[in-house]
Image (cartoon, rainbow, N blue to C red; front, side, top):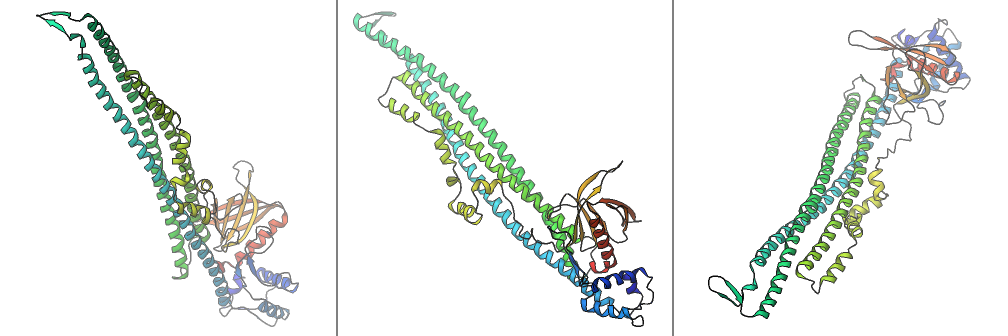
Length: 512
């Protein structure tokens, strides 16, 4: 058809060469119009449920009433066919531009929604992490105080040990004439020796008590503090790595969205002809955005795991401290005897429910604010755990037909080097006249495996189910050729693709 348009500067084509291939194609269109098989030349985006429906990026290249008029003119060879090439190009170009505008508005809306959801989720993760670290810091301070208490007690017991060693009552009531004499009171002397013996035994108990405190402090309390600190430091390092990676991913999203936005502004405001496929630019952005969502979900899952890990460390810590204090009280009783409050102290320590105490301290209600809990339950309508580990951003346009897609096909493509190796392939024909292939069924977040321009492509059927397409790949110095072999399940699907590509090829001016 493009050849017909070039035959007359006024857009008038004489119907004098019926053998011309372009004229035959036009006759076929007219015949289909008379049979009411196709009322206008309109390409619609393929619905996922029915690939036989036409897809639409080029709408009304020739209006129905104009076609009817042209058909009547064809019946009389003496009358010329009046086709305004410039107006047709303008209409179809405008239709393509409107599709790009629709796609851009959808993508911009999605980006605003995505960035808002990411910000809320990340802010909540950061807030929970900060509060967990605040509780950890308080716990660390408690352990430092306990260790300090134990060391001070060692100093006190060492002072008591010195006093006990120097306090000898056996010197009472003795005569001194240069050497120790016998006590003047034998029975009293016997009683004094009993007291001194008891004090010696207490001195031995103090020595044992000092050794116990030193070992308990060094081998258990300080070791526990070191282990807790090291594991928490590992968690802090992981948190920092997540934050850095997310920052890098955010920059990547911004970069691709800005490129996508710039392409759109160049097309609409500056009127520049696109040099790249607009859909592929969108998919690059969507891929980058998808990576952020996935990594943010991993961040939330990591937070829940870290939360549980810190709780476990705190359970071990509280259990150690409780048992240490019980043993400490028993050691005091061994050295200084049982005090009236001893039984009540031991009973109180035995009554501590470590798991329950820690669970309450690290519960959702304690760590999160009331407003944060309401946000998750009301606005997000999810449970807390699910919100963190199953985070996702819903694309409300995902189920709609994509404005930048002219047509979709499902087939297999040959990727073998020796012999044929077929893999399931999704195929998309874009508004910008590109042929994209995907592994499997494409989505709005899929990345195409290959991108081929349709300009200059040639099709050859290798069998009723196999179609070979040769693409021309533009290069800096010279163009190259790339062949793609596609296999369909039905011959009708192959014929549909050939007809579609042939039709789009004739109207390539409308696509950009």
